[in-house]
Length: 245
Image 1 (cartoon, rainbow, N blue to C red):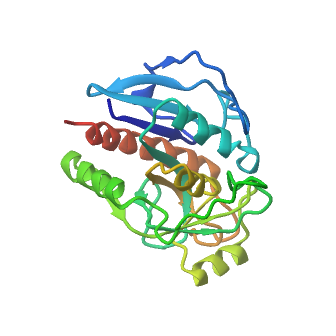
Image 2 (cartoon, helix red, strand yellow):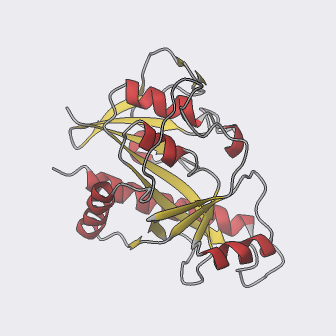
């Protein structure tokens, strides 16, 4: 049976709440996964869900064990990965709660364990197109079928976190071509490529990036949380549609 993994970011997904914890060893050659994977089905299709930030959502972005998470999903039989991310909007046309399906990434992180390569096992992968085309196409088709507005394209700028960015950093990222900013797409996407796992990011816009809101001095955290709730609900509808036969 074909199996899809969902790497869940902030906010969770309602359709996954009925899934059962899967009893398996969380130890991997790359460290320990900090939350038990949950296995269930959507529309009779097998799904493995894993909370990226741990069961209690306590792991900050630069300390997530991306290598262990992806390795375990592959071991459990995942054939592809859909990852949800909450992001800030650099592109002024992107409104809070919008869903974005980016096609490129720029990595601004440092010090993360970004490869499965070892001293005697050098891995080179083509990362020209970081997101899997077929998986992106399937998600766009699901959005059309469910009536969910999904913005096709854009560039995810991945920052170190956990602090939010300065307005000057966002200005730089805009000059570089980024349209959204988040903290967790890398090295996750590259590790999936090393494991030959098709991977796509489903991004939920929760706020204008620093310096892009009506009030340039700060980010409204209450409005951010409200947009997250609305965006998560739309993402959940889209994913249920993705699993329609």
